[in-house]
Length: 87
Image 1: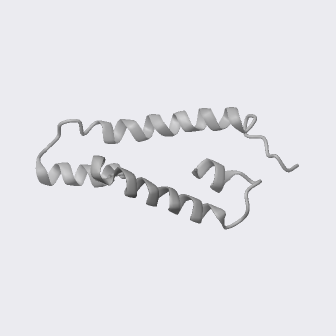
Image 2: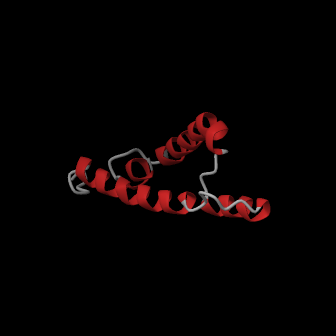
């Protein structure tokens, strides 16, 4: 969502905030019961530190890094190697 709405020059100015905000709202609405809606590794670290529960904590650090790298590769493919559509 960030690559498509925030960095692509072909999107409308001012659209990024709404698109990213609605994406976060949907993640919280649908995933909060499953994951606690922890989308921030620092928040997950603080909760694990206070609770003393470190089992599976690594996933909150590894998954965002790998997911963002995968998103860049996919976006590069669908955006024709980051070419602007309006030249």
